[in-house]
Length: 193
Image 1 (spheres, rainbow, N blue to C red):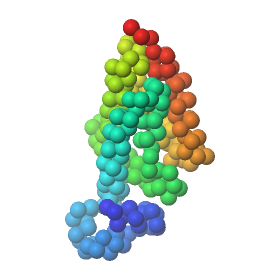
Image 2 (cartoon, helix red, strand yellow):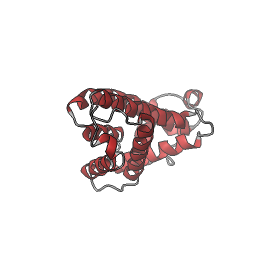
Image 3 (spheres, one colour):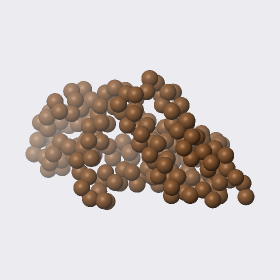
Image 4 (cartoon, rainbow, N blue to C red):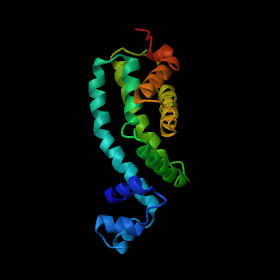
């Protein structure tokens, strides 16, 4: 996976051959094909490997966010989900990986859906903590907020992949503004019971 990722970043996904990946990984092409019958599967494996790497950062952020207000906590979580995709080459590779996942999307519970569910669980965890800490309204409809916040995260992820932000700070500002504006009555100004 590392050899493929390195070559995808250097040469691009389309220009990289399975034989080049096998050579870089110091394995025979038949061995590579045994584990990854198609190059697309290497992109999907790259995606999940990166998500595993991000899992610790997300868990650490949940702990760190206890000292933050509600908007800062949620916006920070959404921003962190896009971390590691800052360079132009990285964005191109992530676009390829997302396209590979989308091509596998043919059932309601496939890998593409798992991507959404994975991050929704982090959003829900954050909202539950904010509710326990009385930083959001106790009557906040958490399931609906998860959907709204996931939509904000997805929109900003797509904008980031499309090179729509001039800087990471511009992305942070856009996420914070969307979090504060959309579910404002629940996240920015809680009604304490």
